[in-house]
Image 1 (spheres, rainbow, N blue to C red):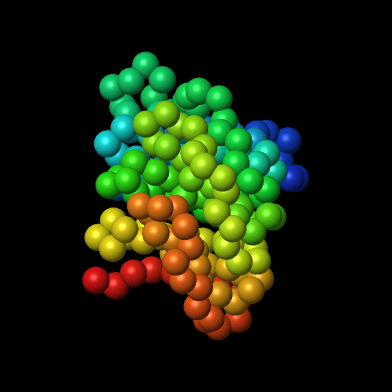
Image 2: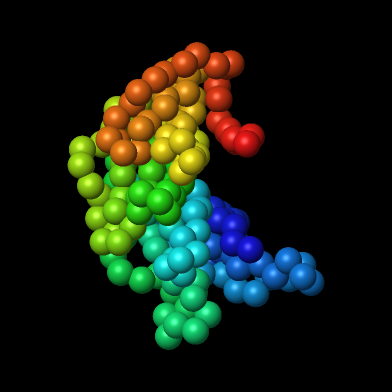
Length: 178
């Protein structure tokens, strides 16, 4: 299992990064150092990659999670620059894209998972987009907008908002039931 850790400001040792955790015996295997407030995680199991949002650097880092690779548990390539304060990322294997919520500028950045480049212009959603989830069956991505109390629905074929609906105060999470 992988978990992000903002670090301990009182601890002089580096603790900020991605914690690799063995769920069989409840032990920490290692810490993959990653600065600038690592936050949201998404796994691309087909490519053996872990995508990590970095709030303070406005970027996404990619970590190799393929155990047979020479770069296993290392950051690979340069960080991908996205919008202001990226919170969460969700992947669509069907569309080969990653969707990143940018809390600070009210947008969603789209990443091509084959090239690891941002594609198109940022998608304007609500105020303080926080969480994102993708549904390859419906070809839709759902974004919770913390500051506008809404959920934006993005068509993953066109990368355009097709609907926005009101929800309760301060939505931060979401799941789909099928």
